[in-house]
Image 1: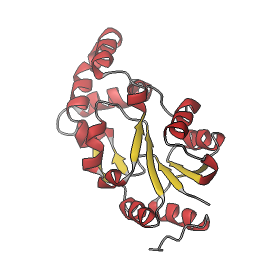
Image 2: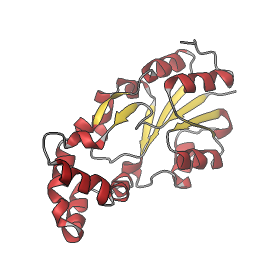
Image 3: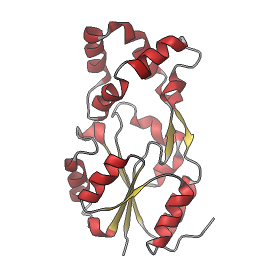
Image 4: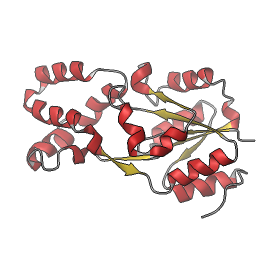
Length: 203
C-alpha cells in the first residue's frame, strides 16, 4: 500500500538548463569554460550541500578568478536557468493529490535560490513540504538526508515511492528502504505508479 510519493524537483518537476543564465550575457567560449572545462558540477554540488554563494565567490576568487564574471552572471540570472515545468508532471501531482496520496519533495538545491523554484513550476506548491539540501546542509545521495526525511515526516519507507532522475540518488533511496523509481518522463512515471496499484487516470 503506497501512501506517500517523494519527488525530486530538478528535471522531475522543473526543467533546469544552466546555459540559459549566460545566453546573450557572456561569450560562448567563457560560458563553456565555466560550465564544461571548470569543475562546475562539483562546485555546484557544494552549493547544494549548504555553502553560501558569498563563500563560493571567495573560494573561486582564490582558485580560478578568471571565472568570477561567469559566476556573477549565473547567480544574478539563476531564474533564467529554470525553463518551466517538466511536461506532464503538474497533472501527475494533481492526480496523486486527488487520490489522497501524501506528496513531499526532496531536492538538491541551494537555499539561496530555492525560492525561484515554485514560480517556474507551480506543481511544487501542491506538495505538502520540501526538504531542501542547502537548508539542512546534507545533499543526496547521502543516506543521512533520507533518514532526516523519514524522521521529519514520520514516513514508513516501505509504503513510500521515491522518484529521482539520477541513478545514484535512486540507489540511495532504495538503500534507505524506499520503492525508488528512476524518472524518465511523466508518462513513464504514471505507468509505474499505476503498476504499483495507484488508481491514476491514464493519459
